[in-house]
Image 1 (cartoon, rainbow, N blue to C red):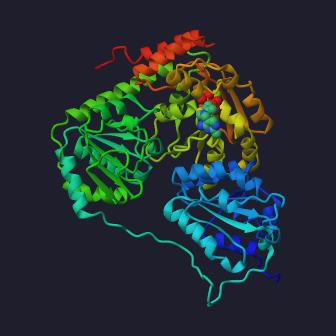
Image 2 (image 1 turned 180 degrees about the vertical axis):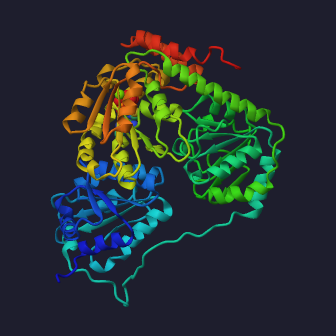
Length: 597
Ligand SMILES: Cc1ncc(C[n+]2csc(CCOP(=O)(O)OP(=O)(O)O)c2C)c(N)n1
Ligand SMILES: [Mg+2]
């Protein structure tokens, strides 16, 4: 039998770690690994993206939706550089991803050789927790094991660099000798008990409050039952940070939905009116949407001592697992008998959803994007996984999509980069081939890279047990989110040269790949299009001609923002008349009298 090479060993160690999928792209910097893949009958499965950044996003999506470590691979120099944006997306959203990259052969290093880039420096920031180069076989498995364990344990990005010819060396294990570092597999987590004094102090603050608001983020995932119970005891409403959208069902009457720039009015009002704030598993950054600094008494629960206590002047910062800490807190909480605060929140929430339904029904030219999301909500399968690209889609996803228990959703929450929509969807399908996946992406994001990743979908969909992957393109020929930000924040009119997009036939492109493709340019086609896409025997692209003049900015936009918008329109915005018509119609819904309101 031929000797085992370093490349062979890397793949066998990944298999031992339970890695089933590696998202990557070839290059001679990793030829030794690719050859090993061939010998290993493609185990773990090498998934070929169109671009290394997409491979990284696919690993991030995979990690977000499975909770397992995502792994991506790329060649030296340009391949490694292309990975970066996707790796930063993982780092900023606290998702475990390991990057494996090639490097110039050891004999050429330092010689300004072709494709030689100082990769240790390049990855120093993005993989600040662990980045190492393997220059002799005996460094393995330690470097790989630490990369896996550190990524998982610290929920971050790590990187392993292997010079090209090292991959072909015969593997030699570390020995029981001076300057050799053996290693081992696996990781089990401790069950950490929350601090009893801290829990008592938290209960005291929460029991004293009369108007309690809760804010939950992705750290509260897996603690839905506890969050619900605490909210009931405290008579509180619960707002959700963007990455925590799938923590609690939007069908619960006290869930106020998203908060912040993409948020809902009930979240905004609750934060404005509360006297106590309980934050669980969130480091939501836009503190101006939280209570005034002297308004509320704060308690925060977070697993990470490095992230707790920094968004609000809390009285109690409790480090711990969300579910375990809430379970410790529950017996100490007194059920609030005065329920008017909670009833007020619930009536705000039901009024909000009525308003959203009315706004979604308004005519637009041609399709109102809000209706695309509300009609999707009505039809979402129980186990759906939903993602959205950055752009107006992220706003509608945050505010208008109604998630139910059992569904998963995520997007690029912190880096807010364009481009991850379609690759996250692909990562989700590799993690859960049996679940339907829905991607919302702007036309700008599709042109940036979503279109090319449709080619990746073409290649792999036949192997998914449930072939449904729906990509809904918000086709508005505009970088609409930024157009509106410029109007609302800067009072600047639309700068056509930077904002308008060339028109592309997204459905035509998808059809050319053999995917199901539907063009939607009339409002009453939206519902049937969702029905068809969710009943299809293959992935579907919905090319939805959306009106760019329905404002994605939140309804509680400040007076300043409204004034700035008006100023921008008067300054000669090419869409001013349509914006006035659609925008004002939409806004008006919020001021019209409501049933019981
Ligand atoms: C990589 C990257 N480049 C630029 C931006 C700034 N940006 C945020 S949203 C957006 C517009 C997105 O346009 P599109 O995908 O067409 O979605 P729309 O808002 O029109 O629905 C831009 C340019 C970004 N977030 N990330
Ligand atoms: Mg657009």
